[in-house]
Length: 388
Image 1 (tube, one colour):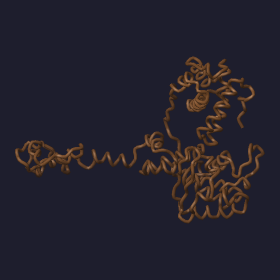
Image 2 (tube, helix red, strand yellow):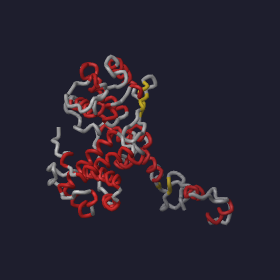
Image 3 (cartoon, helix red, strand yellow):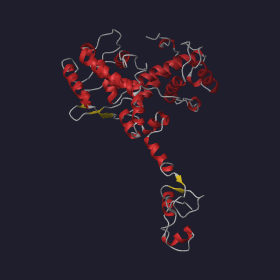
Image 4 (cartoon, rainbow, N blue to C red):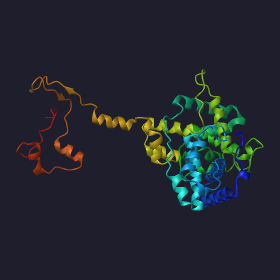
């Protein structure tokens, strides 16, 4: 467990009151439980770091203070002794923005909002189809042969069907499933969307068996992962009817680390978030639409396009390429009445009317003569394979 290095009792009155108002403002904005926790942590980190730099009041933030804070947080000189990433700084900045809005501090807010984080995704890490299928086979083995670890297998199966964020998996309910029709639809806590997917036939008997098992435990008729079945760690901060997201990560890690591919090696060691990356990349590689991927993941189409589709050329791109270049090579004029030096296309080129329609306007009969330069209205024989 990471060592705690930020403490609420070290905040002065100005930052403590500002943080309290910021948290209340986030709740008023409708922030979900997870986002509220991020607000609390983020505002604490910001307040402590600002005090480290001698900024004892949020109203004192100007361009100079902001730049010093960014440099401090993103260097090895900070409290952690290790620079945070651009993505990590962006989260701190977002918490600070909520705090400044709560205080209605216009000038400091303008300074913070004008900064643009330079977050660049250079690659997407995900499991290959072989790796994912090997992990799924392992999960099925665990469910059949390791009764005490069946929850680990179920966690993996859910992440193959429609990979949720880990907190959504931890709190997933049986009424989100329709095992008769083979459907899963659940609410995403992060954005309120309704992700879901069709359930593979091979998973339905396993899920049905798991439902019978959990129904014998307290809360198991409601949740797939009731806390009554979980091993007590002694570190739970609050009582909840289901397990935590951290436990889901442990479940998924067990399946990954105990999987063997062809008896030689294990899958890549990737975080649980990579289930989402894996589903998206496999779907797009198969030619699935952005709408399909967005629905399953509970993301926007713009997010899928920004983070996934730009890393590959899918079947739709290949079809467009073929329209432009494919299947119409030039051949010589042998066997025709044309001169030997003139080559032709294997198939006919579009006539002027077709090209005009493609450009967005239609040619009228009376204009055909001037377009074709023939002096007549019959243009059916023009264009053709010669393209002249």
